[in-house]
Length: 164
Image (cartoon, rainbow, N blue to C red; front, side):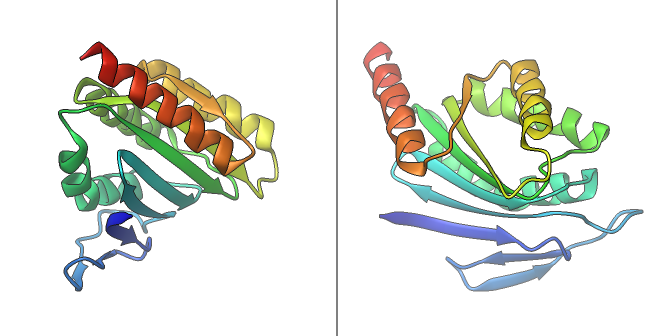
C-alpha cells in the first residue's frame, strides 16, 4: 500500500500527487540539477533519484518532502534509495544531506538500503554515498536486488520496534 507520493522533477516544480498541486519554486543562483521521487510504503520511504545533484536540488527536494518525513517520525522506519546514473553530490549538497540524514536518524530512521543502477562508475558512486551515510551515522548497505534490500530494511525496522 502506497500512502503518499511526492516528486521533484529538478526543474523547480514540486508535484504532490496526493493533493494534485504543482508548486513553482524559487530558484537560487544556479539551475537545479537532479531529480527525485519519494513514496511511503508501510514504514519504508522509497526514494528514486537521478543525479548528479547540486545544493539547489537537495534543499528544494528536502523542503518538498518534509511532510513525508514527518509522517514517519516517532517510530522506526527505513529508506530504500534507488539511484540512477551517477549519484554524485557536490560538496555543499553532500554536507546538507549529511545533516538531513542525521536528523532523520534521530527521529526514527533506523537504516538505509541503497541501490546504484546504470552508473558509469558504480564503485566510485558507492564510496561517495558510503562517505555521506557514515558521516551522518546512518546504518546503510548496498544491494543489487530490491527484494533483498526491502527484506533487510524490514528486519532492521522490526528489530528496532522490539527495542522501543
